Image 1 (tube, helix red, strand yellow):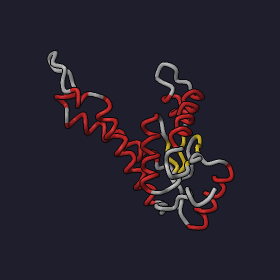
Image 2: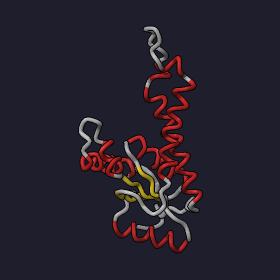
Image 3: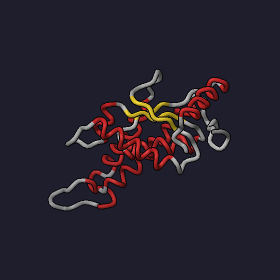
Image 4: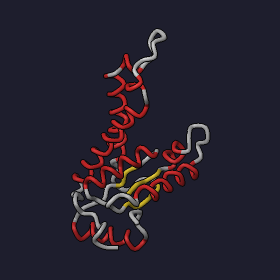
Length: 173
C-alpha cells in the first residue's frame, strides 16, 4: 500500500524528525509529472509527498473542462494504482507546503521539452508541406525526456533534503 494511510503517514513524519531529514513535497499537473516524481523518489529510495494544486488539478482535467475536483481525483486515482508497484510510500496533499521546490522541478520537465524542440527543429515542424521526422515530432519522444529530467531533479531534491535511502517501505507499516 504505497499511498500511505494515516498510521503510515504518522510514522513517516516521526521517522523524518528522528533522522533529521525532510520529505520533498512536489506538485504534479499530469500523469507524466506524477510518474516522474514516483520514479525519482523510488530511485532515491525515499518516501515523499505528492501535491496537486488547484491550478494543477484544473490542468489535469483538460483545457476544455478545467474541472479542479475531477483533475485532482484523476491524478489521485492514477497514483493509487501506479504507486502500488513502487518500493516507497507517498502521501497525497493539495497545495503547497513550507518549502516550495516546485518551480525547479517543473522547469526540469519543461526544459527537456524545449531542448528537444530546439535541437530537432527541422524534424519537429512541418516545413513547406514536408511532414518531418515522426521520431522527433511524436510527443512521446520529448515527454520521455521530460519525465526523465523531472525524475532526476526530484532525486536531487531528495538528496538536498538528506532523504536518500530513508524509505520506510518494507520496514514498517
